Amino acid sequence: MTKERISIYIDRNSMNSMWSVISDSKTKYSHKHNMKIAYFKKLPNSILKLYCKTTGKEMSNISYNATFKYVGFKPNEGPAYESLVKSSSLYDSLYLKSSIRSPELDKDSNPLFNKKGNVIYEERQVDTGLVCDLVKDAFLDFYDIAILCTNDSDFYPAVALVQNIVGKKVILLGPRDAFNKLLRAICFGNLFLDEIVNVIKKYNS
Amino acid sequence: MPRHERVAILVDHKNLRLTLNNGYKVFDTQTRSMKEVTPHEKFESYLGINVYPREKKLINLPFWSSLQKQILQQYVKNSFTASSIADITHMGTWLFISQRAHPYLEEPYDDEEIAFLDLMSEVDSLFGYIAKYSIDNTSRANKGVDVNLVCQMLLGAFQDEYDTCILVSDDLSFVPSVDIAQNYRNKRIFHAGFTIGPLRAACYGSIPFENGGFQKIFPISPT
Image (cartoon, rainbow over all chains, first blue to last red; front, side, top):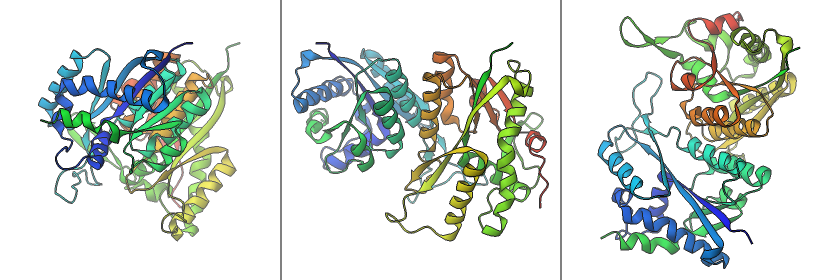
C-alpha cells in the first residue's frame, strides 16, 4: 500500500481569527506565536496526529510533504517579518510565502480607516498565492490530501476544482463552532482545531 | 501553414468597471509623481459603463459587443506570433462578476441590482460571453472574483485549453497565477489594462489601454 502524501496550506490571516474564536482570554493567540520556532515545529506534527486520530490511520502510513504558510505583511512590520523568515529557515519543510499588503484607497486615493481609526490594509497575493499552489500541486501530483487551514469562502472554487476535476482530497481545519458553511459542505472532511489548542497553551508562557 | 493559436480572454468585470468609473493613474516622469488621467472626464459618460437604470442600459451593449473583437484585433497587432486574425482561434471570453448573496438569504435585490443582472444575462446570451458569478456576502470589492479567475486560468493552462490568455485586469493579485501558467505550462499571458507595474512586468506581452489606447480601441461616441 502506498503512503498517503499530505501537504498543509495555512492562510495566516484567517488562522489568527480562528484561534481567537476558540481560545479564551488566557490562551489568546498573539503575534508572538508566529515567531516561536517551537510552535512552528509543533503545529504540523499535531495536525498530522489529529488527522491520524480522526481517520484511524497510523502515522507510518502517511508521508508528510511540507507546510506552506501564506502571510500578508503591512509595510511597517519589518522586525516581525525578519524574525518570521529566520524561524522558517530553521525548520526544514516549512515554506513561507509572504507578500506586502498595501493600504486600501478610496476614490481620491486617500487611505481608508476602520471604526477604531486604523488604516485598512487589503490582502494582495495571499488568497491567490495559496490557490495557485493548491491547484498547481494538485495538477503536478505532489499530494494526495491537502489540509487547508482557512475560514474564507473565497477558496470554494479552488476546492471544487481540485476535488472534482483533478481528483484530490481537501480536508478543512477549523474551529468546531465557527466553520465556514460553504467550505465545510464541499470539502472531503474536516478536522477540529479545538483539539490542538493545547499546543498554543504550552507555548504561551 | 502556421499552427492555429488558441486565445482565451478573461475579464475581471469589477476591476474593469471600477477603473473606467474612477479613472487611473500613471507615473509622470517630469514631476516624478503619480498623475491622474481621466481623458474623457469620466468613462462613465463616455461608455455608460456604470449606468444602472433601465433606460440607459442599451448604451452598454455596443461596448460589450465590440470588446471581444477589438481586443482580439489589438492582440494580433501587438503579438508577433499571429500575423492576422485568421491565425487565431477564439476559445471564449470569460466574464467574472461578483454578485450579492442569493435574495432569500439576505435582503432582496433592489431595482439597480436587478437591472444590472438583467444586463449581464443579456450580454452573455447575445455576444457569447461565459459569465461566472461569485457570491459576495460582504461589501469588500473583488471578493471571490480573483480566486475564480485564477482557477479558470490555471485549469485552462494545465488542461491545455489555450495557448495565449488575455487578462483584462489591473489587479496585482494575479501575479502568482501568471507566473505559474507561464513557467510550468509555457503559456503566454497578455496583460490588457491601464497600469504599468508588476503585473505587466510578469506578463509575456501587453495591450496598453493608457495614453489614449482605450479610446483608439473603443471609438464609441457618447450618446
